[in-house]
Length: 122
Image (cartoon, rainbow, N blue to C red):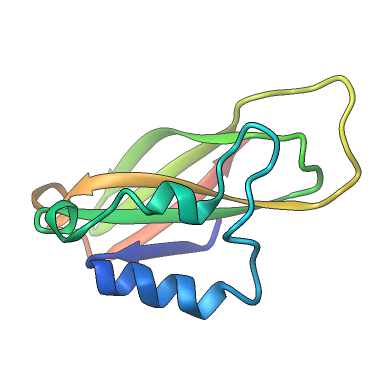
């Protein structure tokens, strides 16, 4: 299972960025992937009026790997993001990288869920 963060408001997002800015590289992109800050700059109070962000964090053994949400599964009171690796390069870098995948979810679609989870599907 992967670490999951549920951000209900713009204040939650800003607090998240502030909490992790010295631990994670939120302000730098990687190759074709824009930075976390660049991607999340698009979210405002209007978005959060009826949406929530659900983030899953993947720690990868190479910065060459890319990830995406393949599916969302529901079970009982749990909302789960199914995350997959989207590429399988023949040659990879030896750097470790951390990636966030982001789900934009309507509040009305998750109102019944109290648990949030994510899993890496191999």
